[in-house]
Image (cartoon, rainbow, N blue to C red; front, top):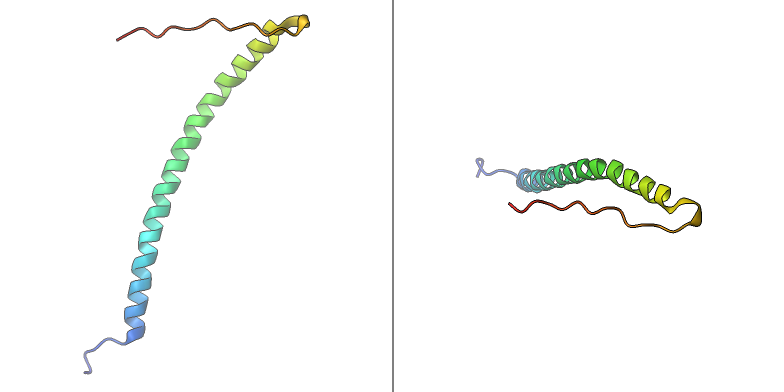
Length: 75
């Protein structure tokens, strides 16, 4: 049985396979989080502008007025 691999090598191979799967999962999660972050980073300036419009439209009386609605064309 000189050709048989030691148990420690089999354990290391199995552990390496598990880590490779974990790494692939974490990379996919990281890519999804990066995409989510980029989308949120584009939304924040729009929300800041809308917030500023609301503050300005409130005026000194503190009443907030509804912003004009933009209608999307049907297509």
